[in-house]
Amino acid sequence: MVKVRIYTKNGDVGTTRLRDGSKVSKSHEVICALGDIDEIQAVLGMARAECAEPRYNKMLLEVERDLWTVMSVVAEVKPQSVISDGMKESIKIEAATGDIAEKTVMLEYAIDEMMKEVDLERGFILPGESKLSSYLDFARTVVRRAERQVVAMGMAATDVQKYLNRLSDWCWAFARTVEPQHTLSAVEEV
Image 1 (cartoon, rainbow, N blue to C red):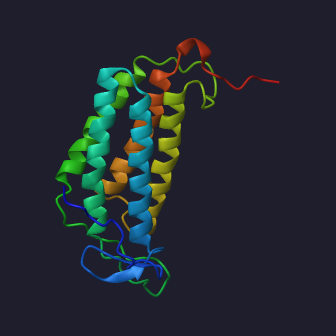
Image 2 (image 1 turned 90 degrees about the horizontal axis):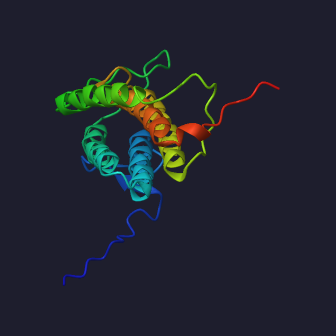
């Protein structure tokens, strides 16, 4: 067995390296976006660990793997400097994002299929009906944060931003699908 040291101590001063080798602060917008997407993967892993239904487990695993592709595109972004009016220049992503666009369409299909099983006439939904649905609701909030981060990087209207937008919808629909339908919490009128 080869022993691998997992720490380098290179980041002990609050910096890390981007994929191109340039050194940046650990609070750099690309690092923050990658951290948010990594967190999505972890929370979806928690959901998958809780999920006993094989077809749902497979869906979660596929999305976790798709997030690697999303991270690889985000890692390639070279944020533009702030232009005179304070707005970031739009970043053009030339990376192979066709896979991400295709995955977005697949998420839309999955959302449509899941929503066929959900009764939404009960009012506002409160998270917490089951551990699995709670993990999915938690994942949805992290996806929204990641989406805000990639927009702040100048990636609005890119395949990555569209994918994240749809992924948050997918998490919401998935959470509603796996909740016990008879116990959905609705906000009652007082």
